[in-house]
Image (cartoon, rainbow, N blue to C red; front, side):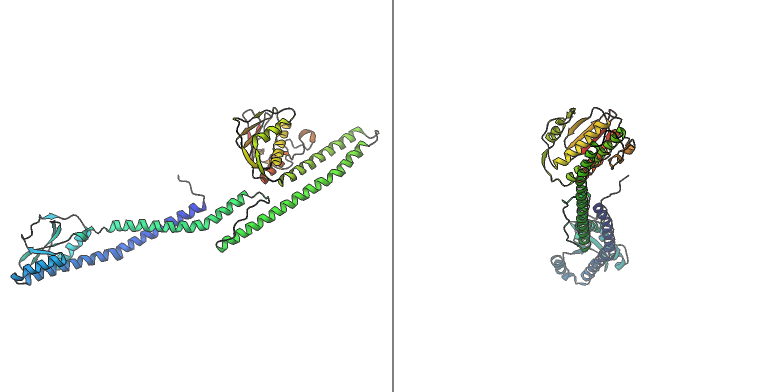
Length: 423
C-alpha cells in the first residue's frame, strides 16, 4: 500500500494536482463537444456545399467555357474537376478520417444518394452524379490531418502543466514559511540563541511569526530568570550550609554519635543537591566554541580515578561547535552514574556520538525515559549512600536539551547500559 504523505507541501500539491487535472479534463471535453466538433461539422458542410456548387456550375456552363472554368478552379481554389475518366488516379479508398467521414455524410444529404471519396495523385476525389455526368472533383487532403484527440491531449498536458506549476509556486509561498516556522520551533530549546522568524508575507503568516517570536522571547526570559534564581539560591545556601557543618563539628562529645552521623549525611545530601543545581545553572548559559571532541573526552577520562577505558575507533579530528564545560558536565554525570550503578565503565567515541557503557544490571526499557526526570530512582531510595541525589541523569538530559544535543539510553549486549550523547 502507498503511504499517505505527511508533509503539508506534498498534500497540498497532490490536492491541487488532482483538481487541476479534473478541471483540464472538463475543459477538454467541453472544448471537444461545444467547439471542435461543431466547427468540424460546419467545415465539412461548407466543403460539401463548395463541391456540389462547383459541379453544378461546371454542368451549367457551355462546353467551350468549361476548360477556362477548370483552369480558374485549379489556380484560384486548388480544385480539379472533370468528367469520369478524365482524371488519371487510382480509385483507392482514403485513410479513415473523422472530417472525411462527415464530408461524405454531408454530400449524401445534399445529393440524396451515396457519394464515395477516393484518393489519388496526392488529392482526394469526390465522384458526384450531376446533370447526367459522373463528375470527379479533386481537392486537397490537408483537412483530414485534423486530429482532435491529439489536440485534446496537448491541451490537457500543457494545461495541467501550467496549473501545476502555478499551484506549486502558490503552495511554496504559503508552505515555505510554515516549514520554516516548524523547523525553528523544533530547534528551540529555550535558550537565548533563538533566530527570530521574518515577520513578512501574508497577514496570517505575519501573525504566526510574530506570536512565535514573542513566545520564544518570553520562554527564554522565563528560563533565564529561573536559572538565575536557582543559581542565586544555590550559591547563597553554601554559606549557611558551611555554618551548619562547622556547628556539627563543634558539637560536644556527649552528643549521640548516631545523631551526628545522620546530620552529616543530611548535610552531604544538601551539598550534593546544591552543587548539582549550580552545575546546571552554569551549563545552560555557557557559550559555544569550536572544540575537538576526541581531545575533550580523552582529557576528561585522564582525570578519572580509577582510569576508564577509552575507545575512539579510527583516530579522526572531529571539531564540533559545543559548550565544552556543559558537555564535560554531561559526560561526568554519565560516567559517575555508570561507576555508581554499573561495573567496568567504558567510553566509546564514534564520530559525533559519545557512548558511556557499563556492565551493571541495566535499565528496564519501560524506565529509560523516566530515569531522565529529576529525583527518579529505580530502587525508590533517597539515601545518598545508595544512589546520590537522583539529579545526575536529569541534569545531563536538561543540559543536552538546552544545547540541542540528544541523549538516548539503550541496552548493551553485555547486559548493562549504553547511554549515547549525540552532539
